[in-house]
Amino acid sequence: MATARDTAVQDLVVAGFGPSGIALAAAVEDHDDAAGGPPLAARYLEKAADSAWQPNLVLPGTDIQHHFLRDFATPRDARSRFTFPHYLQQSGRFYPFTLMGGYVSRLEWSHYVQWAARQVRGTVEYHREVLGIEPVTGPDGRVRTARVTSRDPRDGSLHTVEGRNVALATGHEPYVPELLRPHLGERVFHASRLLPALAALSGTPLRSIAVVGAGQTAGEIVLHLAAQHPDAQIHSLVRHAGFRMYELGHFSNEVYFPEETDYFYGLEGEQRERALEQARATNYAAVDPDVSTALYQAAYQDRFTGRNRLHMHRRTEIASVGQEDGGRVRLATEEVFTGERGLVTADAVVVCTGYREPVLPRQLAAFVPYLRLDPQGRPEVTRAYRAETTGDCEVGIYLDGLTEWRHGIGSATSFSQMAAKADTVHRDLRARLSRPAAPVAA
Image (cartoon, rainbow, N blue to C red; front, side, top):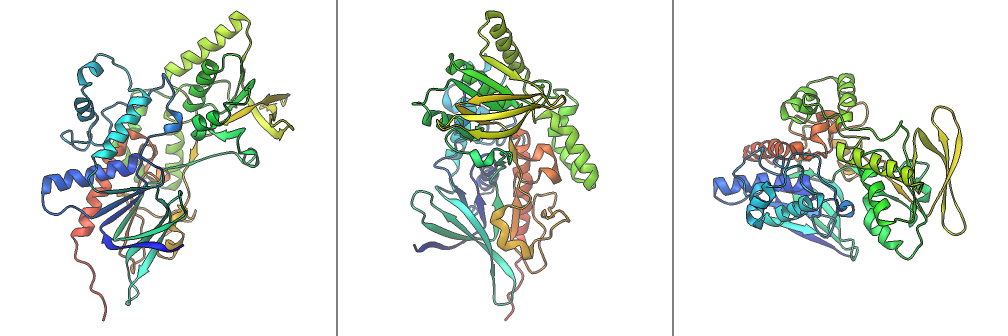
């Protein structure tokens, strides 16, 4: 199949048009609106059919875990047309929203994300999965542009576009423990596929469902399954003493402030690892107070009524996995301290083991000769999230939301610094574009 080539060289090509990509587009267009003149030539590529935010996890009664003013633009410029308050005003829900208090529902936040994506006037191409980013070498051996190749998952067609700068905003990847990977399929699936996976099982009797993991998503899914499948046995498997709550202290949650990113970036390798480990309790492997209360009440009511359908397997890890002839999944378990063995047989297993940041995004494989890597094989990155490159490479490569190990927990997938991170990337991008290009050797 022939590759469709776009011959126009873009100032910026963004791989991924989820939250990080949208926030960057908002920064670009707010600047263009204020400055006037020709807009920045930008292209945004997204593998999905739209910019829906975690569409497979928008469950009834769930909400977001950050303040709604930490949106795509307010921390950068409260006058922006991309802010959540502007979304409320445009939707006619500003005053009703102000009467509710609390956090925004996941459903409404997902609507806001898609609304913001639609406000972008630049070229957004959906059904474009970025496969690779290759250096384009000129006759003098210098790399001045990058060729971005994407694939349309609907027909397999390939498309290319060149950019002077490229931002990877592809997000973290679903993580599945090695023990469970061979069994992924219809009956065993990562939480990121929850709703379509459950829909595919709609004709299968679900007498028993296992949920592996102890984070917010796992807690919400346990509650959802208990409500949607009132006759099923629900098994929650966690390695701790039970679901723990996030560290919600005011001071400890300042790790999501931009100045904390400055502090974290200034630390040395081992210091950063220790600081990141301390910060993890604010966002990983834990639940918020609402979910903790709801889970405990559900377990209490289950015991009180004698139904005994909600099984909280605490201090439990999976020792082996097998499948029966009918498709049911057998999870052999062990108590983490005593070694006591158990067995859970389930019609479906939901894997809620979170997401991982790639050491080196696979799309950058062809650029490795031009990247400066640290001893762990990770790209050296500036405070502005730009990968350090060799002297013969002029392309700016930005790792947007892919450098938690270097910039800290607030600069990864959390919305708390989405606007601030985009502002940092955008300012660096504009500074680079304003500099004269190096002359081309004869």
